[in-house]
Length: 225
Image (cartoon, rainbow, N blue to C red):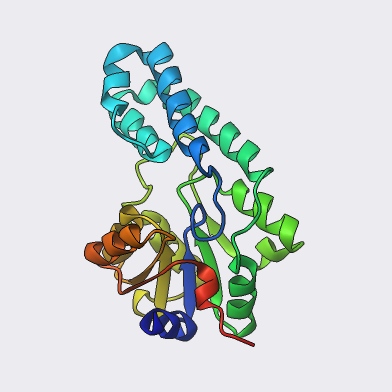
């Protein structure tokens, strides 16, 4: 944990995944319900062949990537559905403990903060600005573009774009993520990744994937006052 804290505190730019480290858009059973709804709509629009390709993929955004690969003509409609559901979720949830404090502390020491998410970028302001008015205007936000999924994590494209916006190099930046695909994206972009996960087993998975450290929540990365 000390390694993670030191890396985050020393980083010129802190990049953070949104859904997980900063907020939980679909807590508990809602995550599975979203996937079920997306797969049901994919079956209605694309038939059983497309539905079978999505079986076994729990992450709704990775389902969208599969749609883009195998049924691109349906991507616009299915991505619009996911965006609608993400925005509805953003109106219901609050930031995770320590999320706003970490952002404000990092900005306060003169570093840049970029939220890099596979979700529609509007969810970031939808959650964070309710907790701290105007905080998102001080951040860089890079997320999913409408109808475009080929550049999503685990590809490093979104992270590389965020580095360009902040003018930072990978070696002076740290990425906080809660999934193996986050770790893969960060490593592909050439930066250190710190895993964030409540479950001990998930933290071990993130470390095994190449994270340099792992914590159970972003509040663990906020220096004590």
